[in-house]
Length: 386
Ligand SMILES: Cc1cc2nc3c(=O)[nH]c(=O)nc-3n(C[C@H](O)[C@H](O)[C@H](O)COP(=O)(O)O)c2cc1C
Image (cartoon, rainbow, N blue to C red; front, side, top):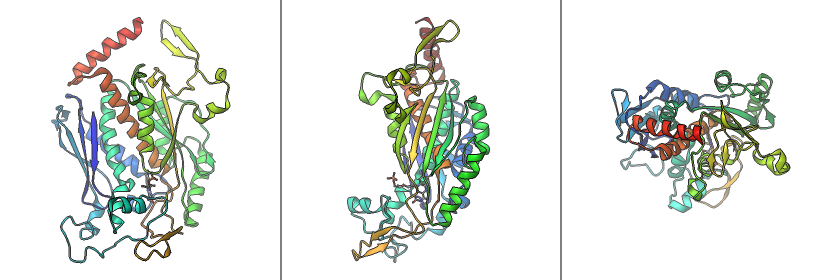
């Protein structure tokens, strides 16, 4: 399976095409929109998220509520486009050059390097596409992928672990309970004390014209052992998930299970002992590996964390240089979020849903849901008898 996205943040719409989804998967349209709504929430977002109420139109590959095996085409209309029709016009316009032209690149953004690389003197041609508005389509694509995963009992959840210097406490709980609690939290945590402290920290950063980053965690449950492969570098699923996570705008690092803490512990306090019972088959005494060994899922839940840098657009801008005059200037301010960490957790969850679904299709292949199910059941029998 593969997908591509297209569209600009203030353009008429965002588009995605998914190729390789099997036929006969029932598509719950409301579930796609629910994922889009989750992406728009979270304390610290800017005014743009009040303008947009994203809904996805499926314009190919689904008929009478089921996939047909044809490419699935999705579009999300940008409501804000009506204020940008001339500036974002596809056709040439008379004073198009001058209108809202961006010539003061923002530190931490793609603006300057993209301008140099694509030889654009209006940096809007860079920022319109580098913007995290693009993640709307990655969430829509993930929302389709997870409907395939749900057929096989695979579930995903996310939570915020840290915003600025506030760290949320975490307790072990069933995934459904984690989903229920975090859905109600404006910062996607289960720890109420940390929730209040995070909200205050975001408000303080906003008043100071500053921004905050953080750490988010995604959990995937119900994944069988054997997705991904140790035999080739680009088939290692942990590696592919890491690439997908760091490809999310503003994500700068990723870890699995114990992650960076592994560096401080001896091996005896890191590796997960192997156990076997008739009832559970092979399983582990702990899950420090975060569900991966040798680039393959080992049957334990996948646990991935990603770190998001603070938003780069500051209302008290950092020094920059005007590309017209080469004079120092404070960077141009575009409307912006103070903290998008809770939304980023939802994006990471859906991006990982796609990677797991893709690996699932590689393992169990097939053009229809029935064919995949039969391959899957045969494999489960093999695992049970091994
Ligand atoms: C959900 C989300 C919302 C974001 N909102 C903004 C924003 O409002 N303003 C901004 O400057 N950057 C925002 N970013 C981050 C930028 O898109 C990102 O930093 C930029 O494209 C440069 O890419 P890089 O940080 O990956 O190097 C957001 C990122 C995410 C994931």
